[in-house]
Amino acid sequence: MAASSIREDEEVSQVKKSVTIKRLLSYLFKYKKTITIVMFIMAYCVGISLVNPLIIESAIDDHITPGDIKGMLVLVAIALALNIGKVILVKVRMYVMSQMTNSIIQNIREEVFTHLQTLGFGFFDSRPTGKILSRVMGDVNSLKQVLQNFVITLLPDFITVVAVMGIMLVKNPRLALAGMTGLPILITGLFVIENQCRVRWQIHRKKSSNLNAFLHEDISGIRIIKVFAAEDEALETFDDLTKEHRDSFMDAVRVNDAFNTVIEISTAISVVCMLFVAINVLHIDASEVGLLVAFSSYLALFWQPIANLGSFYNQIISNLAAAERVFEVIDMEPEIKDGESVTEMPEITGRVRFKDVGFSYEDGVPVLKDVNFDIRPGETIALVGPTGAGKTTIVNLISRFYDVQSGTVLIDDSDVKDVSIDSLRSQLGIMTQDNFLFSGTIRENIRYGKLDATDEEIEEACKKVGAHDFVMKLEKGYETELTERGGGLSAGQKQLLAFARTILSDPRILILDEATSSIDTKTELLVQKGIATILEGRTSFVIAHRLSTIRNADRIFVVQNGGIAETGNHEQLMAKKGIYYDLNMAQA
Image (tube, rainbow, N blue to C red; front, side, top):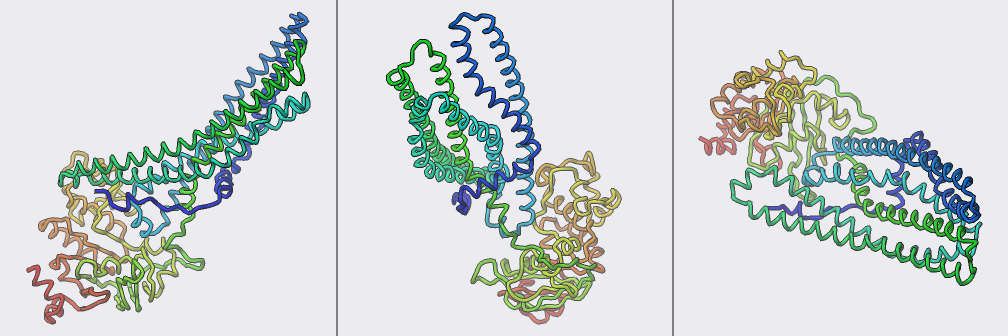
């Protein structure tokens, strides 16, 4: 059941870690004021953490040992006040950072979604929807902790490590050096583990994407699965994908956990070395217990941030694959985009010309070859021919959903490449076989064709295509809520609503690609009356396999073998007794 495009892992371009991290952190630097506030809070908190061991040392050596209870109580009061302030400010910092990082994630997701709108059909044709959703949702979500912990963990812990190292070296250089014995082991271990960890998390991200793609396709195609009793096969595929997802995660986690092991070993070695030097080399006695306790506290303060930094580095590595996947989408150049010197398309009169147009979806497999025609304003052109002949490709080139590889497509006197995409498509009305309806009311779905349309205009559009009567029979009429893809409506009803949406836009050029394929014969007769009215005065392209629907077209183009094999009206082509005649006879 699972297509190869789902099971196949996506290729993600390899980028230097430093480049990806720098780009990710650039989103943080847009919030300089917030970060400044957080930095002041962190400076206070780090300062209190550094002072606490000195307070403990003073309490033991200067107050407890001599029996100075009054001084001890004063010291405790000061420490309590400082640490209560620290706790409060930590809560404030977490709240501020949470707000900031959620805003950043929202901005990144909006950037990805906005860019997706600019990408051509080629991008979406080559990727399952689930894999795209995985990047927009799952991969973007994975960046939240990295961004938040950069400020909350990386900066304060780095400052703490440097400050603690300085204090220990000043207080007792030999104890300090003994307490840092494990650093070379830590650095070597992290260097060895990092590359393997990154690769494994990349693999896990791909397996997650595959699973999401399958779930989306399975749910979308559940009717087909049930019709063909393919539940067992779907379950088998799902089982395979979940096992791959689990195994890739466990493989990544096994390498991931090595970070913590290296940190623990390094810390243990450092503590043992410090105690050995303190007892056997420096011969610290009872009068200096406070110093030893303070040093032990500083050593904990030294290695705990290092452990945090190791975890943060680990987190960066595990989420670097997500960042790369997100940035890859953002960096994709749209196949179809406005050039630097485009102009706004003036009001279209409706002349359409193809000059020596050639096009192919795949290299070496031409769909259209040297196609030439000239359509006069107001003409209705029917495109007929076998499946895959290039009929839909022709109208897609007019709409500039794809760009020609050779030749020129002209509307009026403008090359479609020389005008902005928005100004071109805003004057085109396109209705395809896929009558997609969004979740929302019927009125909202139809208004999609003209966002400022009045209720009267919406109802008039429905009346023209024969949809008004069935809409009014629904319990809530135009306020009826539709589920995804118009669930609850028949295929014909959905097609009528899609037709009304297209008509509402009042296009200068109208494209109907199998627009009546889901309508029964009785309803089609009703719609044809509306179509005749709508086609009047505007250039129209009609693609239909039911040839009875295009008999009244001004001209009929028979598309075959990459070109226009025959052209003429119905009577002329029937008289020729060529391809069109044979097609008609086959449907008689």
